[in-house]
Amino acid sequence: MRRAALSSRSTLIGICARSGLPDRAAEIFEQMLASGVAPSVDVHNALMDAYGKAFQVSRAVNVLDDMRKSKNTLPDHISYGTIFHAAGQAGACTRRPPRCWDERAQGTHPSRLSSRRR
Image 1 (spheres, rainbow, N blue to C red):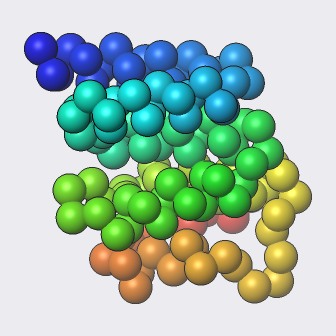
Image 2 (image 1 turned 90 degrees about the vertical axis):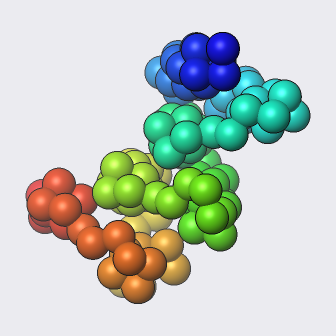
């Protein structure tokens, strides 16, 4: 039952991301937490994607920070790639990268995909 609930909510958050509804995605995420369903890395990534597509990079970074503080759900290379993409699309790239970009310090090594220069 919980696995089905997790999958359907993850799908709903993804739909919200594609539809430009980050606040609705956040509501679904909060409902998951309130009902005792532990969100997976995929759910967190979908929420970060929703924020990123709405150019709300700081909110996406906050989700990543929460993942890094969690003992249950650690970010993966897709998590960091989502942040890189969101920052680039929003024009938030500066000379000094945000604190979340230090993947190696957190134990997640950049993959070819997340470290490839375009």
